[in-house]
Image 1 (cartoon, rainbow, N blue to C red):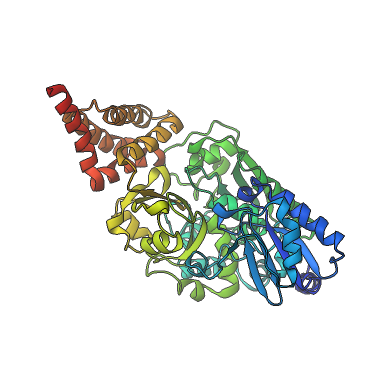
Image 2: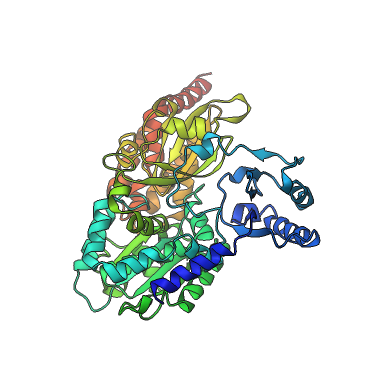
Length: 538
């Protein structure tokens, strides 16, 4: 395929667009509320009314305000309306109101902070295009960045552009993406691999799933650009089996891209070959750790191993391997299209661009948000999230999943970036953000996350395998009102031991929720001990 052919597809797709668009969210959240049935009723109603010439009904990716789904957006020349909690019985009312009339269905204010504070880069196509139609992605400038790098840039220039953008890995650690790419590019080997880590396992996190369900071609294009930059010809997407919609849409996207010559041999009539295969994980949390993930792809048990050597030097089957997560790859095409300076102008001094979060917990507006780095936690929780429902107040927010920590409301003015969250005893993580209200017992929160780590420990190293069990037992003892001061001291000692002697990141970060709740909510631990002491005294 040549550029003129790509642009012709885009032009044809845009020319076929009808004046009125009805977009139904068909991401997993809305599908669970029968969004597919809503879409079917709308299509049938449009046909029955003879409106097919001017009205198009399409399924699109996540529209973000997941708590109000199923969501349906109607775009007419007069403006846009977003309907919430739409049922199959509402379809006729939506069609009747296409001329500007009113319906009984609740509408969402698109100017509210939940939407207006967002800056969609990764999510720019989410909720707008049909994720199962490659023509829709091409019409949104899809695959133009890939053409540009293959025809007009050297691999070294691509690596330099990503480095200059300041992009850091969105999987949790925040390692500079350009540095990782440069290391793989410099490695000498006859084979190299690119892996997309889509093994999203943090409780409350659904960012990567939503991106894959909403815009799978964006991730494929990012992987292909990365492969060209580092000299790889084979890619793998490691995605958990619990994401069947994402897997199905990825399979569809790969087949579509292969048919158009955008994946496979001689992409864009260039010497560059790149193939992508999907590997489905069995749900083990530890397989999100990159060495365990690679072992799983190789057909072995998903167990981590010590580093070095790092995957960039000796990864899959001993060959240099580049591993980034879904959101990182989804940032690549816009950086190439708009320039590294554009991306670097967004965010803070050390944390560039935007971050996608899954906002959940005790908060009015739960869903998917993408905000510039540097946005404060208060803006996210109180303005975008709308605060705590039923008159409650926010007590803390947990970021970074089981590896992260709990940040108290007193620190909500902190800007969200890698360094600030680490200084607070938490971490960015992959993007899970769970809000807790003033009725939440923070010791119980720590126990919940410790139970998760205990269950998910692979058992390879003793500190993690035994330490998490011991810590969970002490936290349970505290919650039962049977713990003493000596138990609390032992808990703190175990936190230090597990953090500093575990083999991989899962064990090393498992104590974080305990440490952060001890740091900010120690009084809740002390009160549970005092209640016990008073009980046995009586």
